[in-house]
Image (cartoon, rainbow, N blue to C red; front, side, top):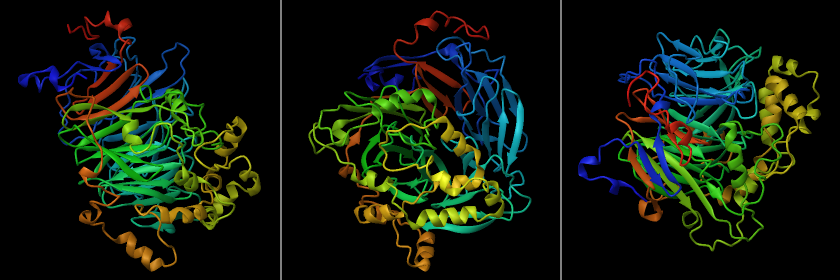
Length: 593
């Protein structure tokens, strides 16, 4: 691999415009640079990080990609032409300038996007969340407008996978809130009732005579909740906090599945592998840490950055599993298929990755590619290979999935679902909204059942019925009985913090408020010593910007990065630059490049 050896001493700080990997040369397309229309570097002092969101609107013209990005107080929405054509910054579809607050994050609803309308959630530094349609240039709703729910900065906002109306919002207060776009937020501060509690987390429902937001309030860890993401099948929620912990929850059962602690400092970012078997996290320890969802343990760390890691992301298109069987990973997710939490085009890769059959002893060669960018202005690419994933067993061995199967199989009838459903649906207005739908009719089309590997597919009728019935149906369809199975596997997860006896509420209260001493976690399965784990080296590590990097997104024909100056760059994948390379002589503004 050509890495730092490409340059001498004086070239170490040179900004790279291309880099080599085993698959070929990635090239920066200067004509495909997106920014504010004036192309002037943004003075980012004191501003929130630049973020980028993509959506495909299935435009008949074949150019359906749309890009949204925030720079300071401004929010832009453009047609994204990628490697095909030069960016025309003079014609944004929508541009918004906010006063008194700044956009911090945003997320498109991929389920409802059309050429005529898209639903975009935007979180703000003062705590509000706005629902807008940048194609129609309309503002639909403003949530937490009076800041009665939370006054702190919104750090992450995402639609719940597979559903049109529910979305989750994280704040720097350490709280997450579940909203329904159909509900109002009320004119007074919400009152809450405890639903679930464990070590360093609690979940409350909103007590109200009429249906209102938020549906649920999650309090997780200590300090800011920096990022969260749903698993590819939509069943699990992983989040990273300023206290240095990665926590992975069963979103259905509101149960903690497993945890991991950073080497030191806060964790700032995380992402799921395309098959949901691994999570990579990065943060203030300058490391990338690979955590196994199946085994609930750290399996490797990677060191390449010289400062905080701000974004990690898996490359769905370079990750490969040779000789893999067809996808079973998300098959019977009848109500929450969850494939839309990323862009739809990632699904083909997920299908290749989805199954390493636990009963098939054939050799399956696995390579996961992921990337990271940081405040050191460097882009690193990493390969996670079989010698790291399975260091002690031959490649042709039989792999078992006992932990993940047990953790995700719903029992015949546990206490958790009954408690959760009762708590959420005791709301009188909630009951009214579903009065015409018998409860037993929900269980058949909406099982969200069994283990991670599935087979049946979801029908359109089932999905529409899942989406149509509002808050109380959310309680029924998404909060299933999982407690018994969790109890069976608790003793196997001595490194998980989430399995605490519920016999003593006093003990729970004490544990929830207790602080975790970093010195006590170092050297444990939560945070192994450096010498106890494989240490990954990056395939490439290149300085690609003057300012800290805030965006890394892998799409089919390119990689997209962005820095705090407000520039969004497109890096053409090997073999994808031919069509546009002829047009690189002159930029859209007429500047000679």
